[in-house]
Image (cartoon, rainbow over all chains, first blue to last red; front, side):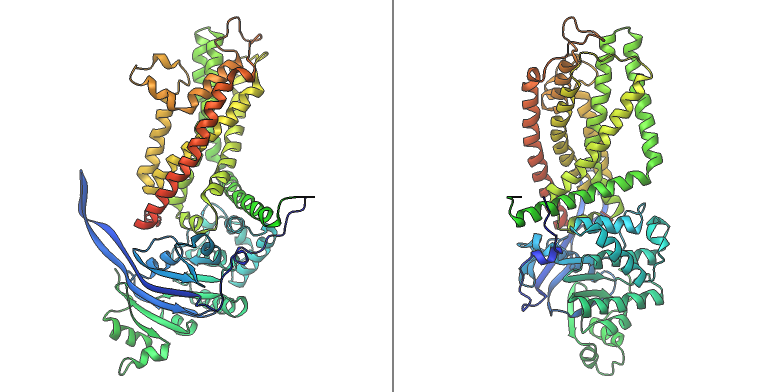
Length: 281
Length: 285
């Protein structure tokens, strides 16, 4: 019995490419956190607002940047859009598909790179990537060739492809994380500080690859960063996020023009949000 | 020529490939942790041998056979249960759980993949332990219904897969306490199932709990198939019963599987929803 040839998973989903690639409306997310010392019967808790009334739209084949310091809600936003967190309220649509109602279809359309490269560290990049490829139903032989090509393109030595990830630097691991996301040819790619921890050369390699993916593979990209030059180089439009709220949105030039005397994007950010980008939580 | 519609065929093939991803991953992880696998196997062999030698010391060959059955059956079911339950713990520690849960894979496919590898791994371990035990005691299984025992093992696996999935909820909620919880569940199953002793020697208040353990029925059926407790049965001339004689136990085991797997999936899906609401999937837990 001949098996039917498998198509990429995203081709199994019907979606309207005339609609916004990503349409986020009034998204809220709060967490309950422990306050003070743990007691025998539970602990005192407090409600923390991580994302508050966030709305924005991303067009097809656009690279949209979300710029904010640590703890501003960037990763929570990405996790919600990745179907890993359920919002308290609001909605998000990906090419018209609802994040919660059409979760199974949406998972076929997206992939994500998080700031911390999570892998089976005892396994090699090859084993990790082929595992991921199989999860997405890709042909392992084709995925093997494609994985190696992506990693070579990102500057990884071929020998490292077969060695355990635990022996690699954080920067190298991050490149493998990027390859994992690119491998499945996602329609929407969520990049959560993808170049954090990379050296300048690697950072440039990744940035060029992101542009290539947008231009050659019809991908829409949501990028969070606190790297101003990176945002200016890659993103058509940028949103400033601070304490869970989007405080301004526009092109780099539009954002600078909002503040009198702002020379750089950072000047505009500090003025509009009242905080510096590299503040810790 | 296939009569299965192309769409369904493609869907099934994709699910099989996705389930195969877990087999691929777990095989390579086992390979990378080979030295630990050898250590655990060595411990399992020695532990099994010490239990079986109690029967040898008592000079009771049928008791020895009963203990051998107990160690082998428990070795299989405990590994199957533990591998499924701990697969979530492991993903929590590595931080990969977000990527697994983000992938377009149903929890049933996920369970099938993890169980497939765990079942094969547990079976290989049991075979090695069995061969090692032969070095300690002479085993003449003439008359035993070995094929029937394999059927019991297979049918019993279903309920242990479901139990494993239910126990996997614990590490989903809390990585450290959850892993501790799965070990406690496993220990309690060992206690109430009468693996090495008759249920009626347990304290009276504990005995009713044996009814809810699938291992109880798997062991009862296997004892009949091996000829244990049958008059005139002895090593070399075992009066192993036919598969028809254990149909009630097989029916109960099947029923357990039919209840535990959907129940496990249901409980797991509720826990997954809770984890997504509270942000517990994050690496820090």
